[in-house]
Image (cartoon, rainbow, N blue to C red):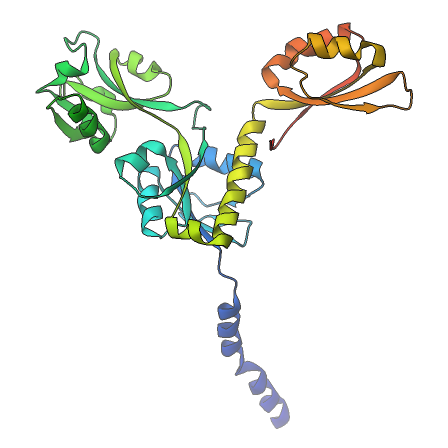
Length: 317
């Protein structure tokens, strides 16, 4: 029994030391990624999934789990991402072009990623006033009160037009503040529907904006980090490109091939392969999804067979 006790102690004593060694040997993530929390959060997670990255998080957690050992990340408000990237807490991140400008952040703009919560269109910051307002142009805002989230962008725009107005920060629900609290607002819109629903009229546009991938300048100078950021950029862009495309396969008689290709320009640069029956060929191409409903019946009418439409995850040009 004493021998067993001695052996047992020998096993137990080194264990805490082994744990410390294991933690020291854990591979640190290559990139710290800033992910936008809020309206872009779900759309961003879906985009990364389509690009091949699984991001999961609990409802109360700001630290996601990413199935790439080279990536770590945090969810923060899009308004703050560019500041943390500039200061080096994040190596790279996703935010709006507007917030990079609002924060005057000195970062590398890697690529545009045009997506949002509701659509794949750019948004814009606009000056809006009540429909009955006497304000017709930006010059008419001289001496007025304006509410907005983008104080600096608004102030710079007014200064460029020689307008002196009181610009105050809005914490949200900006469109309901006119005309009782302020004379005008500067708000973000994609379609203008929300502004019209609140009986507001657009006076001018300050800035067009969309989501962009940005990088810290020192991280961008690091070859390993830059390569990783560029790879992520390529995959995210490829996933966005694939959202509006589909693949199309079909078989057709060789004698009809030239006519089909000349009359149906959507089938541009297809891959053409020989079949066992040399009088037939196989065509495979990528086309805009919105034209599929028109082109498939036309192909069938021209004698095409075995027509297959399939979804795409990524398109890399």
